[in-house]
Image 1 (spheres, rainbow, N blue to C red):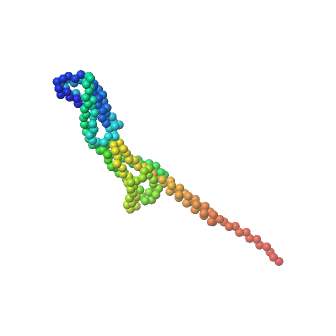
Image 2: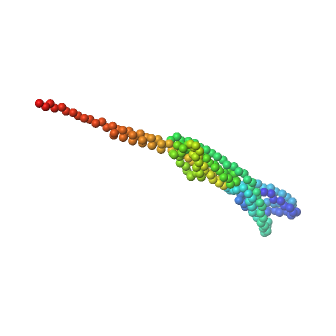
Image 3: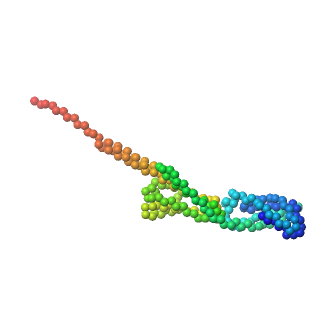
Length: 198
């Protein structure tokens, strides 16, 4: 922030209070005749990550002795798009696929996450959120997730393919087949006696 004394008067101990969406600062400065001073002000990083690009107003209050004045300045927050994508795959009996798209820029951005499964594995797949739409192409089912992300927002999709359900079904079928086979093929024992008749 730059302060400039455009006159020939000397200003000692001027209290400057500034507030904006990015920061708030209070300090006391002195300006000689036609003097220019520059100050660095720390930005609140948490606020910064949530702000959208565009112009923002800085409200300034100056107090010199018993006199006070208010003014304002415009701070232009330039656009900086940026989407970070992370993917994680793990598990065997319960295969887990996780994809996250995070808006690390300062512009509201539309993102799309795609999860593809073959038609057979899709029967055993569930998601943490509902897909925006589903498309079938050949033997592949595509799950499409869409969302408009504000700065610092993210879209997180978790797909779980539960192969243990298929294994449980197969084991149950084998067990039922075994029990039925054992019941149907129960051995029948016949005994025969012979008696002589005169």
